[in-house]
Amino acid sequence: MSPTLEDAISFLKANEVEKGQQVLLQLLSDDPKNDLAWKYLIESYPDLDLQIKLAEEYFNLSGGDAKATQSLLRYTRIKNERYVRQEADDEAWLSKLKWLSKIKLFEKITWDKTFLVKVILGLLAFIVLSNAILIGTSISGAVTAGAARRDFERLSRVYSEQLQKTSKAETQFNDLTAVYQVLSADYEVLRGQLLECQARLAPTP
Image 1 (cartoon, rainbow, N blue to C red):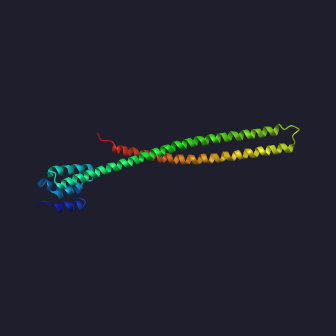
Image 2: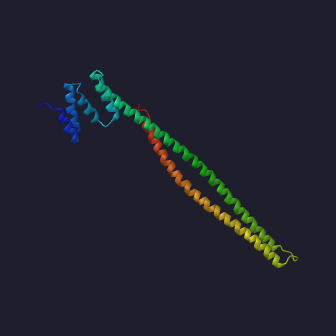
C-alpha cells in the first residue's frame, strides 16, 4: 500500500520528521503539483533559506499557480522582515555602543579632573600647614603668645577645611571609578554582541 499524505502528517506530528519528509517526497515524485505535500514539506524544514528554495522549486514545477506564488511570497516576505528587524537591532546596538563610548570618554575626563582637584587641594593643605609652622616658629617678641596662638588656630582651621575638601574629592573619585568600571564591563559585553551580529550579517563566501 502506497503511503498517503495522512501518513506523512502523522510522522511529522510524532516528531519523526525524516520519515515524514520521505513520504512527502515520494508523494511529490508521483504528483509534483500536490499543494498540500509541498506545504507540509516546506514547513518541515526549520531553515528559512531552505524553505525559500523549496518554495521556488514548488513555484517552478507548478507553473506559477496561485498557491505556489503565495507560498513563495510568504517565505520571501518573512526573510525580508527578519533582515529589516535584524538591521534595526544592529543599529540599536551601534547606538548603544556609541552612547557608552561617549560615557566612557566623559568618565575618563571626569576622573582626570577629580584627580587634579585632589592633587591641588593636597598642595594647598601642605602650603597652609607649612605657613602655620613657619608663623608659629618665627613669632617675634612684639607679638604676644595669645595672638600667635590665635593665628595658629585660624590656620589650623583652614587646613582642616581643606583636608575635608580633599576627603570629599577622594570619595567622589572612588565613586566615579566604580561607575567607570561598571560601564566598561557593559561596553565590552555590548561590543562582543555587536561583533556576533556583524558576523551573522557578513556574506558567506
